[in-house]
Every structure is written in C-alpha cells, then in structure tokens.
Length: 271
Image (tube, rainbow, N blue to C red; front, side):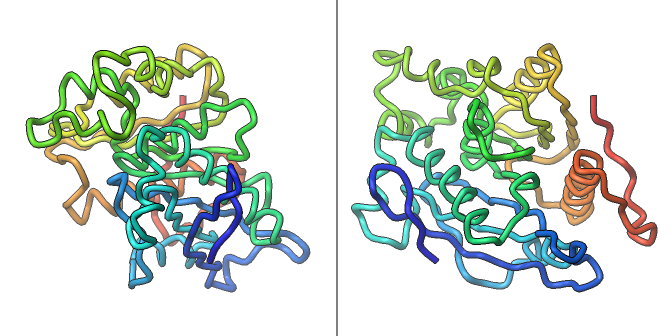
C-alpha cells in the first residue's frame, strides 16, 4: 500500500493485520503495531512468507513492513531519494507510516513501535531520537549508532559506501556527527531494546554498547541482549527465537500486558 510522506512524495509498505483472535484487543480498542525497517539500506521488503511476521501477527500485533525512500523495486528515482539523505528521508517515511497507520485506524496510537536491523536499526534509532516521535518504544538489531565511527571502521568492500548515502568523509564530518543517533541522546526518551552479535565485524559491538550506555546515563529504560558467537544477522535458530521472545517480553513490560504462561518466555531485564 502507498501513503503520503514528506515533501509531497509517496512511500510504500506492506501491512499485515493481527491474525489470532485469542490475542485480540478488548472491544473498542486497537492493536499495537510494529513498523519494520529493512536493512541495506537500499534493500526492500517483499510480499513473501516470513515467519517473523507471523510470530508477531499471531501474538496480536499489526506489522507494517516499510519500503522507505531508497528501497529497490520502485524505480531508480525512488531508490536515489536516499542519496545524501540517509537518516533524513528514511526517517521521514517511518514517521509518516506510523501516523498514517494510526489515522487509518490500524493501530493504537499509544502502542506503535519501531524496529530494524543494521541500516534499519540506524533508522529506527534516528526516528526514536526525535522529540516529536510517534513511536512509544523501539528495537534495534545490530544497528548503527555512530556514523563517523562506522565510516572509519568499515570493511574494505563497504569503504566509501556512505559517501553517497551521507556525504564525503572526512570532509563532511560535521554531517556524520549530526545524523548519528548517539549524538542525539538528548532528544531520546522512549524505551529501547538492543540486540547485538558479539562477533559482528560489520557493525561492531561497541556501536550497541555506546548507545546503551548513553541512554542509561540519561535514564531512558533500556534492555541489552548480546549473543556470543553471532555475527551480523543472527543465524542460529535458538538466537532468533530468544531475540523475538525477548522483544515480546520487552513490549509486555513497557505496555503492561501479560504473556501466556505456555510461551515459557523468560522476562528480559530492563534498566
């Protein structure tokens, strides 16, 4: 589906409605919604079977899989909207998606969350680091917190990649710092859960820990779940399940709903 975004442009998304009547909200209430941000950032969300989407819709969540500016599949002009605008156009589309879903009656405005991995994690962090954010909480999977540090540490095959997405570095070091979520902590007030593989050499673990430590110092509720032996993108079935269960536990604690005992989910620690 299409929806209006900033600067008069149209953005795109796939909407999945909650699918389990046993987890339906009370009469007259609306369900929570997750706005999902793919990685890449010039990748795309596709309408294909996704067990992660089913995990959430079977537990009463709506799921909005966003193809923000820069996503493939909508022509070159749409993909190039992200050139020089990473951390701007994608964030505008995420915010517009949340507000559109609420306006359409698809979601409880007090329980709209944002989540993403890698580049999507960066966008999620940027969207949460806004004083006017429509998101009540978020989940960051091995996302970028410090653009400048990533520019300095990037693997050889990705070197200079951000020159096109942000600006040439180090000439525009100021812009890298301005768009880095870790530099925007003063505006950050929503609860966050962070997931990180400790053997990640694409977005190193210090990107996660610097964000977690900065938010804890500010007093923002944060949960941090790290996985030994995991790299960039979780591969082990037990890791994927534990991450999803931990994220669900996080939302249960933030929004005050009970998890079914038969799920056997261990509560995640929030501090």
